[in-house]
Amino acid sequence: MQRNPHKKALMNWSGGKDSALSLYHVLKEKNFDVQYLLTTVNNAFGRISMHGVREKLLDKQAENIGLELLKVRLSETVSMEEYHAQMESALTPMVQKGIEYSIFGDIFLEDLRQHREERLTKFGMKGVFPIWKRPSLELLAEFWDLGFKTIVVSVNGNVLDKSFCGRILDRDFIKELPTNIDPCGENGEFHTFVYEAPYYKNSINFEIGETVDKTYNFKDAEGNEHISTYYFTDLLPS
Image (cartoon, rainbow, N blue to C red; front, top):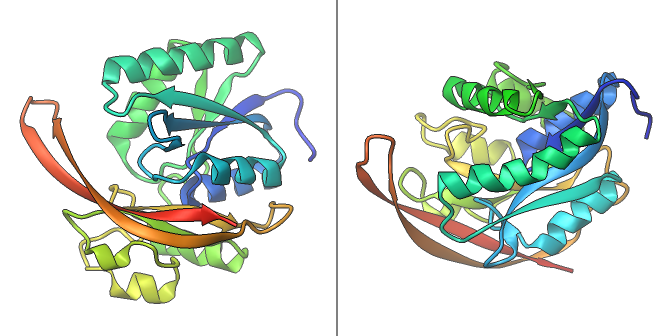
């Protein structure tokens, strides 16, 4: 894998389609030397945060990409204080190795991008957003045309029915989405696992397991309590 030796970077890797497509563009344009994939993991269950995908499948992704995987392990009910402390512990040695850029798959959430950039300045790092502000349907069309394949592994039950979980993200899936749902799930409506990509050495094999629901209580920035139910479809490595 060819690398630009002058712009060392890490890729914030969720295992899903947006980070996968962002990585594609970074590798294609060769403007950065991507040295690590960084992923947050729920340490209690050994699964990707928010996505619920088993670590073994995450490891398979990294192996097929050919990049070293850096896991940031978080507790089951992680606070923002813990999250920032763990990220600081992960990023500090990266900066010491000369990594100055952190790449994200965000599309249009301004507040999230601003938050990321503000946190990165504390380490002297800069954020890179390869697919920023591109229309969701345009991104999906490109994603499919390039040969990516992905499956929906978690769904926000407050906005989508359980039946959307565990399905391949294809054109039929998008057609069935309610009109108020972003086709890329950019508002957290659903999350995915990419099992085939143009830069994978091999496709990742798995079997579809059961779909379970989990209910979470959390407080927003104003201190108001909310209850959210999420559905997770288990993927079994095969």
